[in-house]
Length: 201
Image 1 (tube, rainbow, N blue to C red):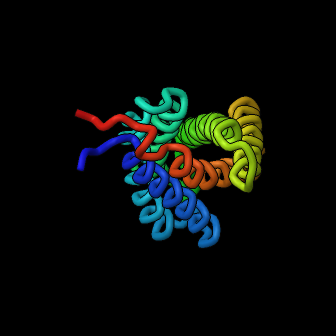
Image 2: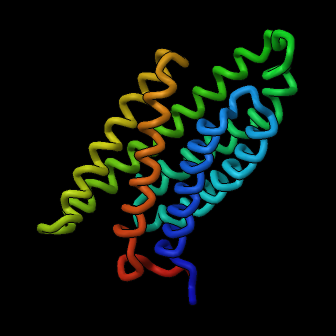
């Protein structure tokens, strides 16, 4: 069996769901400033994001915009989680004393990449939602396409706003991005079917 875009879509979709779960776990368990919680979550998220980044290039053959957006999101997320793993606590985050002043620009850059990744996911969701809506004449999947597209639009707007305004809108932008990631994952599998793809030689 040859590896084609439909197989890549399933891997990317699974990885997107895993990244969404890790972010929910991080919030629920209070990962901020809690190294024993943050490190395992970030490691899982980094590996999942790497899967998204790598295998999205296969999807480029089927849909260049979707594949490109997912690859960008994955790459940014790998860098962002890598910054958390290698810089945050090393610069005194979560300690008993004030962190190193360098920590704050590092934190802002990390979140800027986080917002950019979620904005890219928003574009992917809009594109997939439109394709799903246009490819089906009626039925529930047509409605799903509209909902996915709207969720992507909200994620795009909120995360672009967060890129411009800073950390004040983190909860709203992050939540919209997580929703868009999950909806993108399920729509990706529906839209990219084996019959629509060409096997890699």
